[in-house]
Amino acid sequence: MYIDGEWVNSQSGETRSIINPFNQEIVATAAEGNEKDACAAIQAARLAFDEGRWGTLAANQRGEFVYEIGRLIRRDLQELAELETLDTGKTIQESKDDMEDIANVFQYYGGLADKNGGEVISSPIPDSESKVVREPVGVCGQITPWNYPLLQAAWKIAPALAAGNTIVMKPSEITPLTTVKVFELIGEIGLPKGVANLVLGSGATVGAELSVNPNVDLISFTGGIETGKTIMQAASQNMKKIALELGGKNPNIVFADADFETAVDQALNAVFFHAGQVCSAGSRLLVEESIHDAFVEALIERAKRIRLGNGFDENTQSGPMISAEHRAKVESYVQIGKEEGATLAVGGKRPDNPELQNGFFYLPTIFTNCTNDMRIVQEEVFGPVLTVETFSSKEEAVRLANDTIYGLAGAVWTEDLNKADFIAARLRMGTVWVNDFHPYFAQAPWGGYKQSGIGRELGHEGLEEYTEVKHIYRNKKPAPIHWFK
Image (cartoon, rainbow, N blue to C red; front, side, top):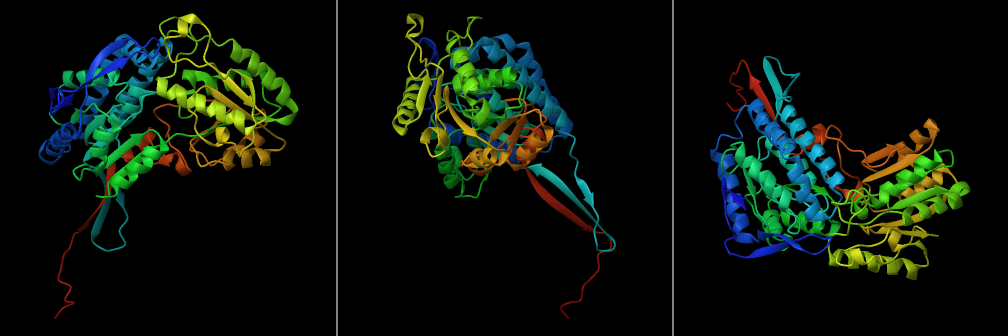
């Protein structure tokens, strides 16, 4: 762990084995921190913010530090990508692409750090001036998930540091390797002690302390909705600022006039990329009735050919689930789908391939004849499971798509721009893709409506999450009021 500029073991001396989900081999041993380690990191971050020079450092100088992290990530891209594949099982090409995106995020926020010098506003009071400035929040606790370990960390670390905050980062306890490596890079660039701290350990100990500790000013969390609710309750004890990204159940709407082959290809990518372990996965397919049969038939044939395997094998198209526990959760949802009356069209079991028996693999799965009242349609499965529904009008497509507690992302496929605009304007989601699925980039905000979360990451909005707004008023000709004689 990295606390106050030093690499340290956990105070308890406990460790955790990190395994490769492809074959369950131990690839690393990590420190297992607890509340005491979290408190030490919080204290270091508090002192660095309150008494250090980081928050008052010129914004362009902070930006140079953040930009340099991005440069070093590009320098060590191959090593980082290999660690990410070992940790998560995803394909090496996915991991390389992630590293490029991560470097872009750091360099975007490094360049953005000095672009908001405040705003002078018109004062209605004579002989006065008024301006609005943004200042850092303070100490920020950051908790990231296991599916995109370093990508999600970058979305939090980069804007927090660029805005002048100090941080305590807690990655998922089962996928910490790339986050540890990036903190090595943070040490390499000479960031002042206490500004960036890394504590490893479980959410029940380290995460809970970050959420409840009164010396933490903001808590940012990406993960499950129930954990998000618990964090909100804990954060309320000292009215922390909160930023939550809590997943989604994302509709992918295909009209009959869409490019058929492209829509089929993208529907597969939408749900089966990274074994469906993506918060924005297009796990709900809504197909116009007139093309339903042909579309589903094409999907099934393609899904059968998806090549599962070792992420380091260039022929692999999809890796394993992250753990035995998570695969069991997905299997339980498949059973629920059968019991609810959905038709299992393909998959729904572990692969028979003997080379995959030591990994946490599950076949790409498609359910047809689904209705919106089914749990497999409403709840986030977070695996390679697709549900298919039909619609007959654009109004019905909107109604079905919005009939969910989530509102992270969605897509519409059509050659009719007016129809696309109609759908995009009515979907209650933070991101809507038209004739595409999954694109994101540093310049565009990311976050959801409804129970998909609170706040935004990426874009200018992602930087603003880590700031407080202050109004400064100056009377240029002060004089007595004589209200009280």
